[in-house]
Length: 189
Image: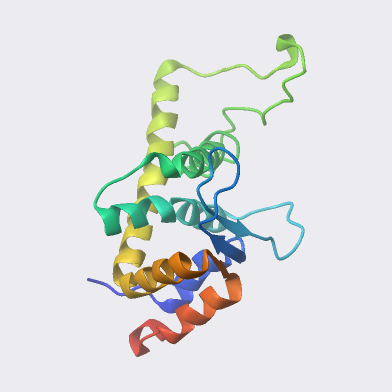
């Protein structure tokens, strides 16, 4: 199996600058979360940055698959957010190689606008099928990337889970330290 360079793995952690990981429940739905803090005000994001965000959002689901060999409803919000990003990449930002430089949807309007002013679907059912396939492809490729990374770094994943079970929260600096200590010479590329 090809080894992913540590510098590439660090992109996932930097894809939102992890501030804190916690297993402390928040509200009704969140049983834990990864707090991501932007390093600067952002108005633009590159395709690779959005793909990295997809990977970060799918991390919890992939960890469930690897550790428990079972999935739960715990990743529901992350899956929704990842789907929204992938759909925007395809329909608003023209980031799909297959569908090209076309915006199929306008940015979402506030819900209080009358329907006549809200954006409607202006493409065919066959194009809608292609859009759905591209959204699914973006999500599946991110899933495969994360699966490969977490499989290769399974020791760090297990150590982090153990630490979270003891402390309930881990700061971003602690996570980055754990990752840097686990770097093998071939991952330092």
